[in-house]
Image (cartoon, rainbow, N blue to C red; front, side, top):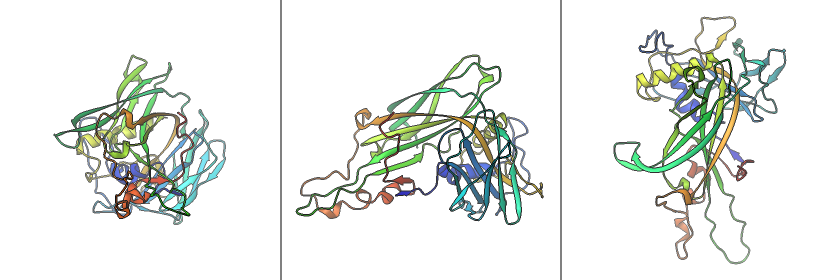
Length: 361
C-alpha cells in the first residue's frame, strides 16, 4: 500500500514553491517592486502536464498567514482542456491533490487547466507543449565540504551535462531532482512458525527543493552545458540502494520567465523559507472576476527522465547501520525507524511497493 503524503510536487508546493508564489513579478533584473501585502485565503493552483505516461497532478490550496503551510482545497472540480476541445477530469484524492490517469500530452498541442470552485470558474491560458528536449548525462561525487554551515561535512553532489537539440527556436528548460532510497526493515529471527519478513521501505523526496535549475539556449553558442543539479548531506540513507531521478522539463518562454522571476526573488530574499512581501501571479485567472488574486501556474512540458544509481560501495565515508541485526542485541532496541516505514520517512513520501523502474536503469 502506498502512503504518499503528497504526489510528485509535494515538497515543492508545501515547503518551497508556495512561498515563492508570494513574490511580486520583477520589472527589471536588478530590483524588486512590491505592491500590496500577502493575504490569507488567496487561491493557489499549480500543476504540470507532461508527455510521460505517469500520473498527472494538480494542487489546489489557499494561502495561510504566520508561515503556515497552505490549506488544501478538496472540493474543486478540475479539468484538463485540449485545444481540440477534449476534456479530462482529475480525481480528488484529498488534501487539495487532484490526479489524472492514463492521459499524456502530445508535443505541438496546447492545453489549459480549468477549475470550478465555490461557483467560480478559474482557467489558465493555453500553453503549447514543446517538441524538443535535451539529453542529460548524470554523474556524482562524494567529498568533504561546507554545506549546511561553515564546517566541513560529507556531501553528495549531483552533476549534469546536458546536450541540447539544434533548433531555430530557443529551448527553455527546467529540472526537478528526486531521490528514492531503499530502507531495509529489521527482521528478527524466531523459532517455530515465523511470520514473513516485513516489506522494505522505498522513501522519496525532492533533493534541495529550494534550488531552481533553469537553462535558456539562446544565451549560449554551445550545444552542451555542465552544472550542479543538487547537493545533500551524506547519511545512512545511502547504506543500501539510492536512486536519483532527474526530470528535465522543456517549457514555454512564459513558464521559464515565471520561474526566472522566482529564482531572482530567492536571491534577493536569501531563502525560499523567508516570508516574501507580495505575490507573483502566473497564468491562471478568474473568468468572471479578473481582478481576483490567483497564485500558481499551469505548466505544459515535454519531459525527459534520467536516473542514476548509487550504492554503499560508492560512498567513501562511514555509514552507521542502526537497524542491522546483531546476535544478542535486545529486540526492544529494534524499534522506531527499524520497523516502521512512516517513522523512518519523517513526512517524506514512502511505499512498500518497489518502483517499476527499480534496478532497471
